[in-house]
Length: 418
Image (cartoon, rainbow, N blue to C red; front, top):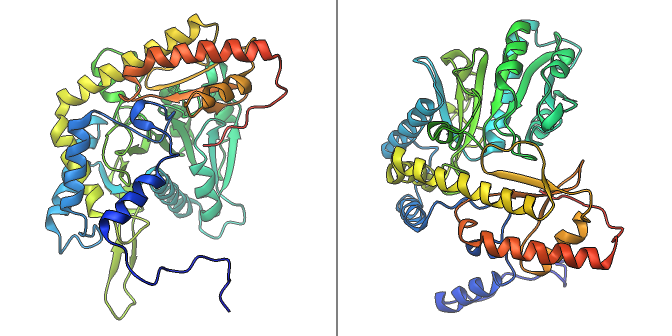
């Protein structure tokens, strides 16, 4: 018997005009990202780029990235996007890669490839679970992958500046270690882990080294070209085996687009899955998913063609300037930057401000507040939507801080939710 409280599918269809009004109304309480009120989730490089992304996506709305035999154009787009990404990340002649639907899938497949390589070296029937060794700041997607793939995640304490500690990581590497992880940058504080030092430890011990550049993969190379002090983090670093880099972050493509790269063809081969015992025929994918939205592949290609190297440099210059403006502004208000951010992420806190109360007051002013903890702080992942509202944000932050101070300690604790 149907649940009387559960809404039923409408008996009759709805005309588009009425349906569109419902869609617009449904968004009324969503965060106003177009006015820079979202602390994350959106990556915007200007209206021209957004329109190119949308139009390319719609051109390939129905095409399926699973059927590259049928849609040769998508195969061409993916191949070129992968080559462009490898070029940015110093991939050698034997480097390979593929597009995925997001950073979590890229990380999942990198863990799968590392696990399989570890099993080949040590035997698949070993009683002890293989491990992933990573700093406390590494993305939770590694925990998720470990959960589903049967690995044990090992988190190590951070060094000064919220950086991964190579010595702490080295102390946890042993024959069970399938993967070592470092971040470029780590999402909580926006700092670039010491990739060279971590990779050297992994290489010495014969462990698979993965760089999580989901945030920085399409931002850090251009920041470095602009003269920012970006430490080496990609395939130019000896020992790096795989890199995840999201196109739908600072590649500015439509959502559902990431890349996973490998230093060599043998490592790349472990990314895929093949099955040939099916009446329909051979089944093979490089990715976890089967069907992939052709629109996301086309969007990534179109955005990269729209921007080109010079366009990415121009947008990156503005993003870095925007982060510096926020950073200088919050520090002038008595907050302190957590760590030494070099790209687009800014986390800031204060011993004298009640962060939970300040965040609540900012929410009341229309800003969706992101948080970090240990220590408590406010988290921003910046893009061009934030560029024109720096002054307004800082004015509201000053007012929110004064309001929180006048009210006294709130007794509330920061509860960060991703």
